[in-house]
Structure formats: structure tokens, C-alpha cells
Length: 201
Image (cartoon, rainbow, N blue to C red):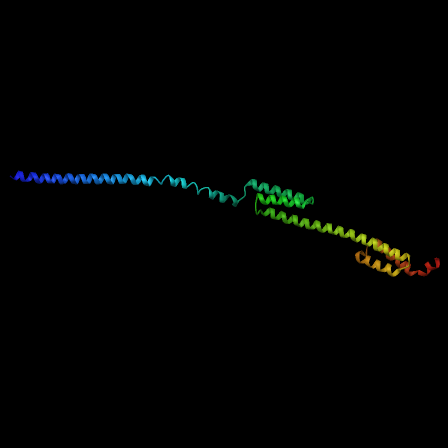
């Protein structure tokens, strides 16, 4: 009888153990399935990350490039500056400025271009002053010649006051001009001896 009572209890125990084994195996299989799906989901975005990384990488080299001009850009700017100075020496200041603009395009804000531009501006100003000086000297010479002619004509007709006014104006322009000095001497001689001329006439 004791063997009969143990038999059903053992069967129940085995049934429970079997059910428990099924639950453990099923749970383990479920966990295994979930663990297999998660890495595949985690690996799915991984290819997107390497694709996204190369896109930001190119901008830093592009931003670093403007920081310093290349050797060819410097050579191009310096050649343009040499051309600009050569043109300025010939008096072609418009061409010189165009060459300097080419240097600006090759290397923006280049100190050598700015220095050349200042030198060329000074040269243009000096040449302009020299041209103005020459033009003024020509005008002065023409004005002096006219005033000396007026004075001599006045001396010839014994109009010494008119001759004196003309020579005063000529002397204000250039008192050392030889024609003015000669005309002044002629006036003084004529004014000093009017009677002699009257006698000869």
C-alpha cells in the first residue's frame, strides 16, 4: 500500500517538473529570440552612422583652406603686383589699379598689395603735381611774355605808367625772368632821359 501512495505523488511531481521544464525552456527560447532581435535592431542603424560621419568631415578642410593662401595664389598675386608697379612707372595708373585688383582676387587682404597700392598712389600724386607744375610754368612764361610785350609797346609810345604796371605784374610772377629784367632796364633808361628822345624827335 505504501508503494501505491508514492506512485501517484511521484507522477504529480514529475508532471510538475515537466511543466516547469516546459516553462523554463519556453522562457529561455523567448529570451533567446528577443536577444537575437535586439542586436539585429541595434545593428540596423549602425550602417547609417558611418554614412553620416563622412558628411561633416569635408567642411573642416574647406574652412581651413582660406586661412592661408597657397603658394600658387601668392605667386599670382606677387606677379600682379610687379605688373602694377611696372605700369605705374610708365604712367599707366589705370592699368596698375586693374593689376592690383587681380592681386586682390588671388589673395584677398594681402598686405603686399595694400603697400603697392599706397606706393602707386603716391607716385600718381607726385606725377600729377609735376604735370601741374610744368603746366603752370608754361602758363607763367606765356603770361610774362605777354606782359613784357605790353610794357615794351608802352615804352615805345612813352606811356611809362602802363609799362610800369605791366612789369610790376610780370615781376610778381617771376622777378628773375631775364625778359622782365631787360624790360625793366629799358623802362628805367627811357624814363631817365625823355628829353633826349624828344630832342631826337
